[in-house]
Structure formats: C-alpha cells, structure tokens
Image (cartoon, rainbow, N blue to C red; front, top):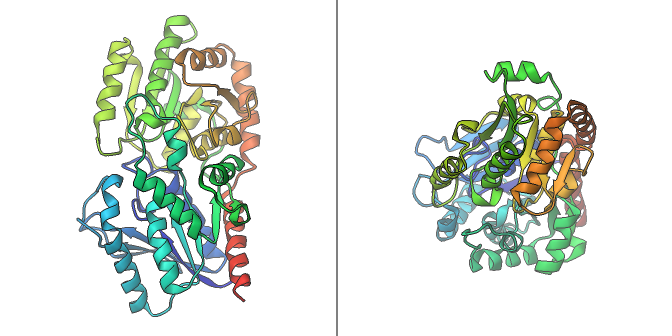
Amino acid sequence: MTARVAVLSVHTSPLDQPGTGDSGGMNVYIREVAERLAARGVALDLFTRRRSIDTPSVVELDPGTRVISVKAGPTEPIPKSELPRYLPEFLGGVLRLAREDGMGYDIVHSHYWLSGWVGRSAKQEWGAPLVSSFHTLGKVKNYSLARGELPESAARLAGEERVIAASDRILAPTPTEAAQLVGLYGADPAHIRLVPPGVDHEVFFPRGREAAREELHLSGLRLALYVGRLQAHKGPDVAVRTLAEAIARDPEATRHLQLAIVGGPSGADHGAEVARLMELAAALGVTDRVMLYPPQTQPRLADFYSAADVVLVPSRSESFGLVALEAQACGTPVIAASVGGLRYVVEDGVGGYLVEGHDPADHADRLIQVLRSADLQSELGSSGARQALRFTWDATAGELHNVYRELLDARG
C-alpha cells in the first residue's frame, strides 16, 4: 500500500525526550510506528507545534518521514490548557504547508484530543478519512483524580466527543478503553480497532542486574524504580509512601533499598510536584532513600529497569502502561495499580502484581514480598519477560497499516 498520511501531534513533538514536559508514551508510539510504516512504503508527515526558535522547520526521520514544526502561538513551551486558542493558527499552518507541497494526503491521523480538533477540519478540507488515537481520555481521568488534582475541562470533554463522532476509525490500545469509548462517549463500535502499543525488544531485554547497577554507579544497593512524568495522576507520591511503609515494616528486607524516580515535571505548575515529593520524603523520614533522575534515553532507561529489583507503577489511571511493559521486557517484576490498561499489560502473579486501590500499605505488602524472596523475584522476572514478547512495535505498525488499508480500500 502506497499512501501519504498527515500525522498530527500538536502538544508534543515525536522528537522530544519522553518524560520531559508533556512528552511520554505517546512520543515513543508515534516515533516507533512511523519508522516501521515508512519501511512498509507509507509516507508520513508528522505535524507538531513549534516550541523553540532553534527548532528546524522540517526534520527528516527516515526517507519519506518528516517532522514538520508549525508556528502557532509563541515559540516556547505552553501548558496544554492554553493550547486550544492556538489551534486555528496551527490548522491554518498545516493547510498552507499542504497547499505549498501540492501533493495532498490520503489519511489524517490525530493523536490526543487537541490534534483531533485539527484533524476534524483537515478531514473536511482534504476529503480524507480521519483516524484518531487519544492516549488518555478526559472522562476516565476525571473518575480517578488524585487529592487536589484539578478535573479535565469541559472544553476537553466536549472536544473529545466531537472528535470521536467525526472519526472514521478510533484506535484503542486495550479492550478496556474500547469499552470506555462506547460507554462514556457513545462511539460507534464499528469504528473502533484494537491496536496495542509495543516494545523494542532490541533495547529492552533481560540482562544482568549487578552489571546494570554497576553501569549506573548503584552497586551494593537494592532498587525500587518509578519511571514517568512527575504529576499527581501518575502516583509518584504513592511510590514514596510505599517506600516509607516498607522500610517501617521490614527494616531487614529494605536495609539497602533506594527509590529511584526517573522523570521530569509537567503541567501548568511545572516543577511544583518535585518540591511536593521531596517535602513528602522529608516528612516521612526517607529523604536519604529517594534519588531523583532526569528523563533518560531509551537505552539508558533499559539500564535502570534492569538494575531495579521492582518497578512501581501506581498510576491513578493508565490508557495502556508502557512503563510496565518495558520493565517486564527487561525481566523486572512490576507492582502496578489495578487500573485501566495496566490490567491488560500486567498479569497478576505472572510478571508482577496488580494492587487494588492506592493505599501505600497494600503496595508495600507486595514490595516486601518480592524483596524477601530471590526465587520469587527471578520467577516473576522471567515470566514477565516472556509475556512482554507478545507486544512488538512491528505488530503495532502492522495493525495500523491494516487500518489505513481498510480505509483506502473503502474509498476505492
């Protein structure tokens, strides 16, 4: 299949380092899938908002795959909550660049609801079918807010509804999200396709724990790991409280235990979550047990996963749970909240444990259980690595390629 696809990612660029600002699993998804679709002969232009005057207007990722930065609002980072006002300017820039290019697009694929707003209008202008990926859903997030966390805006919820109604195909990463799209948003089940994300097994694979710790200068320690953006919804506070609870209850098993937090702050109160986490660690008496690291490249992140005894994923909600999948691919047990896509990625008692709710005592129960038994840790790691082999980016790209082909065949 030969096709040209306009991929829209307004609020974050596929070139961004995951874990910084608003970038995360969505960035990894777009980049990995684009590379593999290009190998299948699909030409992709990835449109994103220009956020720095130093950013090149066009970056070629692979032959036939370009990242195009569009001027819309100030050329600086802007909180997602302020981006809707700049969407018309972004749309105008995309349409203008398409006219100048003179080739047009066969399919529009939007990522997140902000891009979906642009995608609806681009669909009308070009007469091309719209594929939508949401990555998170506002209504789902509002059902599971952390204490003090502001709910998603009415504008977002209404925007998601309009994008869903206009989409020719909606990609859901798990059956759970597919059901949420139908039950909460009234999506047409006939328009939904299940396309799970994957993992790069050439980067994330089991390796020696001690060698990984030595690589990170963490020899002699035991390690619990949190990876992700530092925002209340992801639950880094639960990770800190879990650490403190485990230390208080079992000083022997946690004698050399440290919590490594890998990620950066995001959102309008940029940086405030870091201060809150350190204040919490101080109040719980575990400041010397918490280590903060900035976002890491994929190969370096694999070192962190491999060095850890266990990876904590205490999110309030997750559309999929890429961190849990990457950790298991590295042979590291996962202790995750039993929410959303994490139930799809982690099989309880196989690659780790699912914990109902966000009570640190319950998460600490499982953490202590894993730390006490080297045999259990090894068994969970091995079985989790086997489970992770079910997910590959090649499979993701193949399913997406089928969706594109289905739409083009329908148009003749």
